[in-house]
Image 1 (cartoon, rainbow, N blue to C red):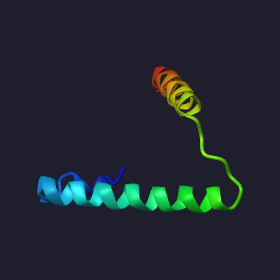
Image 2 (cartoon, rainbow, N blue to C red):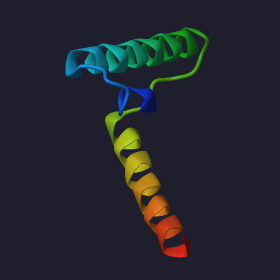
Image 3 (cartoon, helix red, strand yellow):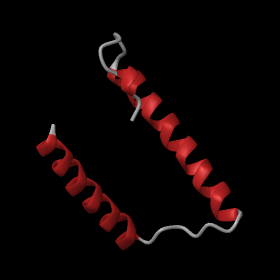
Image 4 (tube, one colour):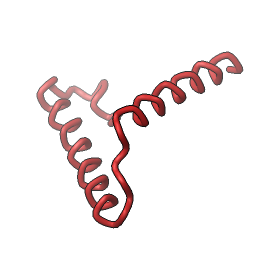
Length: 64
């Protein structure tokens, strides 16, 4: 997530544009990787990854 969209005087539409640019870059990287043999993740794998990451960050907050 681009942090520079906060507190810099950007309009909401400019911020959306920046986020879309980042999504486009992520899409291009993903497509490049897939064309070079890296399979796309299934929905289930992505969901499980996000759940595990969320749990991990909660654990880190406890130690903070």
